[in-house]
Length: 246
Ligand code: BJW
Image 1: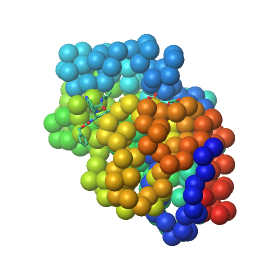
Image 2: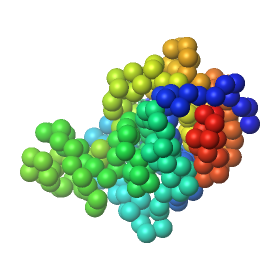
Image 3: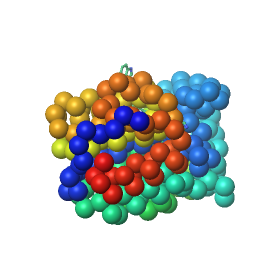
Image 4: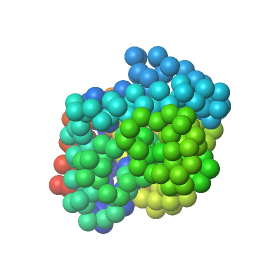
């Protein structure tokens, strides 16, 4: 591990970005690892607005299967999710968790100050009224919007390629102001999340840390890096942070 130069003030503002790697040990697939989601389905077939316009049933089926997987009894938060919720509860300063994940494992672990920048698989978006509603069962072309009552207008509330991620203004403000930026379990392939580390560096004062199984695309931009399973390295990092500020 490459260690931090100086301890972080206990009042410091922390922004944490998470990706699919943090949920891998909870039983969910990543995207770009060997055998990951993009090894068996093409992005162009399931994760673009064009794919949904062309073949909505296929896109519904893809997300129905993943929703069922998330809700199955053997998927649960792992020690990395728990450690981040513990950090949020114990850290005297602000902790903002920004996840690219569409699962609800951070919430289940107790996270409160959380942005799902790529949406949530357990909600539905109505393409007519733009209402967002809880959705825990299968969806199809005839599903009815709980907000406006119309049928045939629902899609899963996730951000596909070419669409604008959620709450970007709030995220960029937090990145510019943060004292510590932690990136966990993401390969750094997808923008704008992959550019967050440069936003923090550009602001000039935030320490940047990557915790991942292996070096990400943008690993050299991080001041500090540690590699291993999230369930091990994240709790260890959080313990260090809470004990001595880093
Ligand atoms: C472990 C582990 C363990 C494993 N412990 N670690 C050219 C240049 C730049 C940008 C673009 C470009 N052309 C197009 C773009 C924009 C495009 C983009 O980035 N494309 C790239 C592919 C080039 N981006 C967009 O379109 C986004 N919107 C946008 O840019 O709007 C305009 C805008 C402009 C300016 C500001 C703001 C906005 C939208 C992106 C939507 C992404 N959607 C998806 C799918 C939907 C949700 C879903 O179905 O789940 O989101 S794609 C998929 O990738 C998913 C993820 O959230 C996302 C990131 O993946 P992640 O989390 O990094 O997973 P992996 O699998 O890649 O990595 C896992 C990592 O974990 C690996 O490193 C493992 O080693 C590690 N790991 N086990 C710790 N146990």
